[in-house]
Image (cartoon, rainbow, N blue to C red; front, side, top):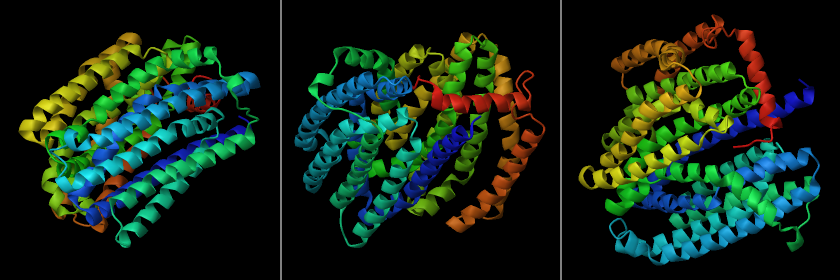
Length: 523
């Protein structure tokens, strides 16, 4: 491995983990600060507006994945004309999408009072309309500006994206705190929140224009480039739609049938699960290039090993997080946002943590399918799950409130992760499901047993009510779990799958990291 390649890997991977950790940290401390300064109604309205505009992500149509792929290809082959055609065509397409998003924003803002009459008190309708206009307009502008972020990913300049993201995150947190301290309200928080990502996107665009000799003009618009983008983006779009239905409908359903204040209580429980998803998801991305390489060489044994060992690694992380959330969840919520939210938000957390743990413990499964380009069935099943999620949530929320909505999400997700995902992957990879379950999950479960016992003993000794007391529980539990992880690594049990030795796995991981930044295929 060349020294420059090592440096690139460390800069890109290290900066990605740092940016993720900072975003989670800022979210943990900023959310309760905003909540306590604005109140339940305003905070719930805030979550509702971002849930509505979050559906604008569907307008992406999977185009960004095409930009990443073809920028990587054309920059590697020095096809500057094709690169210019691609970027001009993508900018044109995204500008059209942004225009449609503006029109949708105006329409939704106009009818906000009628659509959300149950969750918006009379004095909140005008505020909600302004929030929709502000956030929706910013998202619309972000479509054409987002082209430059995709270019940087295709050029393997992840550290530039992460630097601008970290800078925007810190500036946003500081400005929001200052605004709230000076008595500013929800509109000020909204303006700050949407302005900083746009500024970061402008910085990304400036960097791109300095490092690439791009040319712009109508002569570079190309129908073939548009057809190529659309062809590659098709399955990705199905995945985007499915993801929105599966994980981004809760606030909309609760806001429509219950109230904006109820969204706050649901969000507190679900946000903790979201943080776990981000941590495991960042780890699982490495398995896409690993499986792509093995599939390209026809190495079915290698694919099986990546499938089993990858899910084992994901399970080691998510089982730890799940144990902490189940046993210390009440203490986490109390220390985070206050004791009055525990009684309502903790049951939501309990309902969601089980199916999400099942999903995240198999996070490598979907990545293997993407790497093999055999993810269409997964996309269709995820879309069906999303539809069932929405239907069940609407049916159950009317009778059981936010807990009913949580069950509406949990039941379809549990069915997919229990009855479809393991069987489908084992069938594709021609692997016995008993072997998979034993090899992937027995060790992580065994390592979690001492952790669970210690956390229960610590909670019996004293219940944590503050961050300091919670930190004591977490440090002791982490130390016990860390000893188990070190033992598994030392004895090579953490990585062995049907005869794979530690050195073999290390070589495979090293090659996969290089492939992450070399391959043309980006999903």
